[in-house]
Length: 477
Ligand code: G2I
Image 1 (tube, helix red, strand yellow):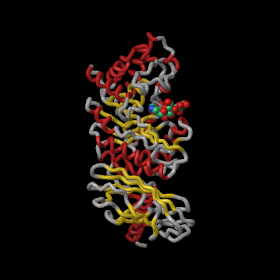
Image 2 (cartoon, helix red, strand yellow):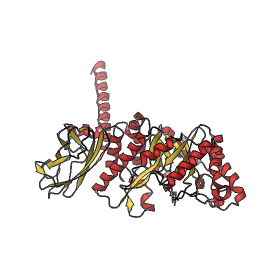
Image 3 (cartoon, helix red, strand yellow):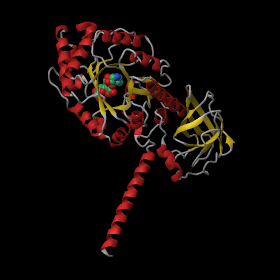
Image 4 (cartoon, helix red, strand yellow):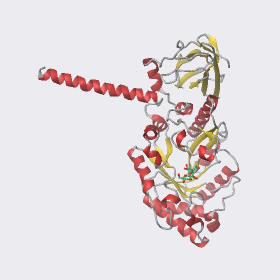
């Protein structure tokens, strides 16, 4: 071979290798069902962030960190910045676990929500048993040392965490008992002095809708603002139960922003009584979409964070026995319907899988592709607002044979036009349409279900899709 021919041969080999890598990466992202830039790039295009909680243990799980790095641009340490970790005994500090989370975040282009400085839980006993006269200096010393350590490295601090009882009274914890309600202003002023650049938050749960507890938080924030206390934001934890996202959430967030503070969804999850059915997962998709839509509807809502990456990492099963499946990713880090619904709510479409659906044939199982070989059942739910709607559909194979692929035909209401899809390809966008499985959800054993959905624009007709059929046979509603 001449020198030129050898060079050409080598270049071709390199080009072929690069093409193979590109193909592999495309296939991998399609399998993950992820949009190219993940939730974070869709969120950033809307002017918000999308975060997750991470613990030190999580950093050693490659499947978890792959999803975290691809999807999220904000990290909250799950436990590593809490008082019991950072100052387990008086004046002796350990920032190594928190530093590890911060390094991971920095290496992956993510910001950090510092969590948290003052809380009655995960509080070492040396603090809770201090004589009242020593509590203020212990609190101020802890805040000053920790905030100074992370100065310039955190986007925000949850300065006081969960100060309220559900009835709107302040918890009678060691801080309140020593200093009265003034401990909150004191904590905020102390944090501000240590890092004037960090956004300072109060964070709590069960304040997402309008109720006695959120009224109390509202009154507190209004009074802090009136006194010139440095407070920048309120965190709404958003630990929801399936189907119970409060309808007043957007209005509630809005009233806080009118006080001149940011708001954020800080610890989102949505717990399901186990085992989760496909209808539950469709409801969960609606719940997640509703929360994201509520944040997007409020101009001072700066971002949404989920509490943990996948169902395997969630605190829910340990704290609420019988409940789980609370996140957007299953225990193998595969996206659940809630993920697709959030993608759609953020204005994206799960293009990865759609693109690959036509390119790669679904794995063939017994039964001819698309033929019902028995029957089908469809459960659907629609969530409409003035100009749009989100629809989640669960198709169940009620026949006796396994389907190797499926194509579900149905009819949209007048004026509805599909703008984005998840877990299926849909065409055309109006009138009678066909939803076709993607590469990863074509196989449906008898009794098995596939959930998919779409977002549509509409002009006043909110009607759910109708006349479902599979292979020319009508499905049971
Ligand atoms: O409880 C859920 C969250 C509610 N809002 C504040 C968050 O900080 C809180 O997070 C959770 C962590 O996800 C859990 O991981 O806070 C729990 C404690 O209140 C954390 O659980 C604790 C366990 O209870 C301890 O037994 C364990 O030693 O985690 C500790 C560290 O793994």
